[in-house]
Length: 192
Image (tube, rainbow, N blue to C red; front, side, top):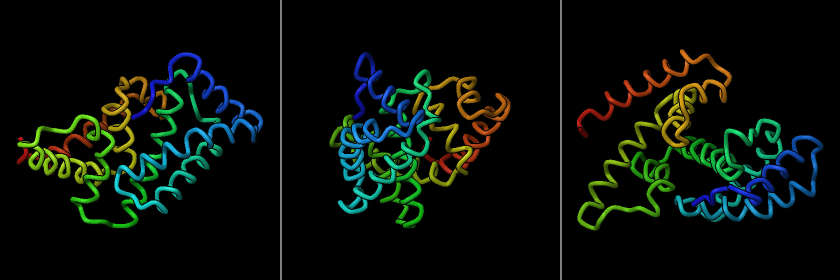
């Protein structure tokens, strides 16, 4: 879904984010908006959002990029990865606000991880049901635990990198991961 932001293109997006952070560069932001807003909107629509909600969340994502540009660290995240993490978090927040049914919410949360590597036809129903249950369980985690789970499992960051990124002690990272995994184990023990 995301392009790997390696090389000149990734450096270019990182430089634009840096310009927004440093001097509220509106031209740099316009280029970021022009490139990423349609992609974020498509991501939202693929996850089941209506056109209007997808548009609203895409705009909200880019507004967060404008506001939080100074927090972007090009050494720890690719520009598109950082932007899509913001988008994903906003989508999860929107889904929680809507209090949609657990199965629909779970499918929406997991779509970005399933869209290009779906299961075979025979296993699709069972796999979708399992993913829905896992996603629903993950969505019940407190925000601080959810964030360390995302960084550890979805962004493949080491515990020390997570501690640095969140500016919390390493022991706190490990504790939050342990608490989250224990809660998920209890909620999902019949899936094993």
